[in-house]
Length: 315
Length: 237
Image 1 (cartoon, rainbow over the protein chains, first blue to last red):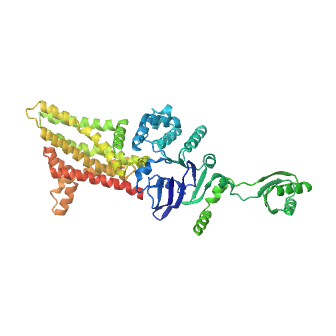
Image 2: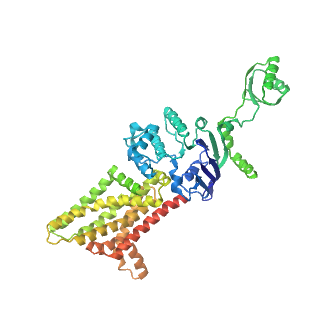
Image 3: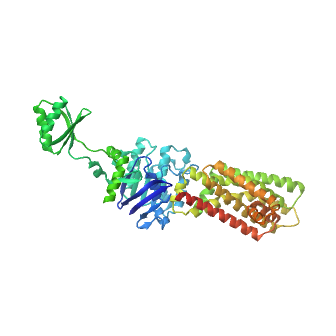
């Protein structure tokens, strides 16, 4: 439904975004990750038409953003990093202004009331936005993006400034909204991505370095790496372990042994018996799973971004 | 465009800003009317219009325009406008008309002055009055457009207001110098800058001058056009 191809943004000599391409067809929440300055906000600003691209294109339902910006903009709701609020208006006045700007055709009162209820701002709807707490202002920002019932929602760090219970509420809301539309969610909080997103796009230095489903991305850790805690003389333990059939390499660091093996159940059994025979108690053993954090750090490392691109060009 | 115009108008009157501007305009122009017309039993309103156009517009219109674009940029609310299905021209014209409506409320006090002098005089100079009012609207449009253009150049409201006042003063004093310039080319260029002078010399006297009316409309459209270009350029920057 939304297709971004070869999106590039150049500021003078600096390339902020270098040829980003992705396509989202199904409803759901897509996480958009990257370190500060990776080009997340720039990309989102280009998709929403706030700034223009140096090259590349954005199409929604086959309509190009540059050819028919009005149609595309009607289908996109956007919550920027800083919610664009007119603080001298009340919540109701503000949402009415947005309703007019979005050229919304739905029943005004019903639609706005529904949105206020959804994001939980009904109790404050007659108050001035400047008098609201940051959490409520953020919610008004989300409400603004929902006006006109857009098919695509782009949220730039929507849970910033909310308290823990509000964060849970907003996450549930985003999950619910994701059932009926496409949501592109940018965030720094990795656990949030794991909780809400079905797909993750990681960008670094203006390039996409990973684009896959959450499950796949979590499983890319090297298979068969076991981590064990064993009591005994380090050298003797390593000696014992290395003699076991199926163990390729053993490392010792931070009181834990990292065992590279085929990783199947048989190897684990053999490790257990071998250690028991030699009176070396095995305290724990588990398969190392790469966390999203470690993956994120690895992928957004400068050198990795370069190798990914070279690999990408070869394909 | 109408939505943005409505929004601007509303924003003037949810804060004291709109009320203060209208109140100052009413108060000072009424004071002038009392001193000049009522005390001297003068039916002629040309002095009032000359005074208002020269002094009130110069200082009050920057107050009206300084917020229009600078504030949106500073608070990033321009992100809402530019990602909504409205064109940059809609935004610029909407804001222009929003400010123009407040200005029209300001100059509406002249209708009251006209009613007062008309009831006390034998002559009913409605043609002159209509000319003067039309002239005021044209002059106001031109000044709002150039001051709004200045607001588009900065994020600071204060800077926008001061620069706009400076430009207004320049456009005011040009009239005094145009006649003294000997080079015809320079004289023509200075004449283009003499925005206030054109009103003072024709409309204020109750004369509808078509070339000057065309000048004002072109001036306004030109500055609204480059204001839109400034906003577009920032998006492409």
